[in-house]
Image (cartoon, rainbow, N blue to C red; front, side, top):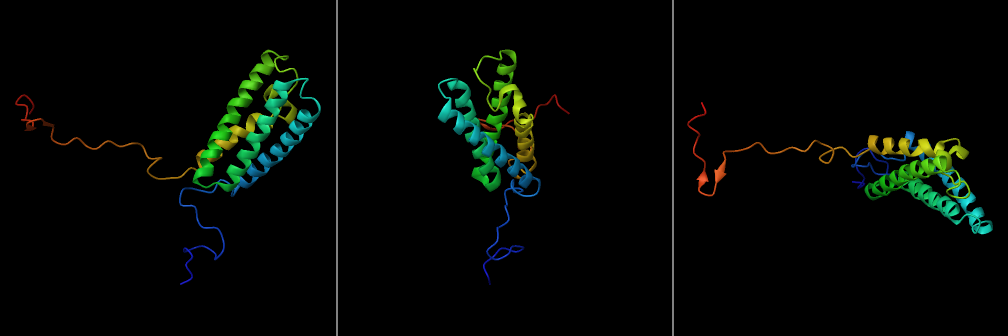
Length: 176
């Protein structure tokens, strides 16, 4: 006996019993796009923090926050285990809220942050990828979610004979 599970290659990955892997198939493309955006956001925020932070600290702090979110989302989607899926749901969900909030604030009041951020104008400076990506990510997490008891509709046990403090209730003579 080799000790490997059926259908696996010795030394290879083991099947994920909790659902499809988030980093395989279409997920590889998603992880790649997240990785590119993370790299771009890190570069941008590093430059801004090092050279211009005092000019617009809120905007540049938001750019740094978005970089951290993209890095965490990239790693979480690539790893895809049960705990990493939770991290992915939180970071991608936070990203969606962030891009909508910062995007709306920057459109309604363009000078609110002083300078643009990754999420300003709903990600306009990045071809609106920051607007679309979290919703694709949430869709992918939903699509690859674990199947089983957690996803099934909650069931309630069938009522049995009603009981009271003195035992089973007597049948209602009015019901026939």
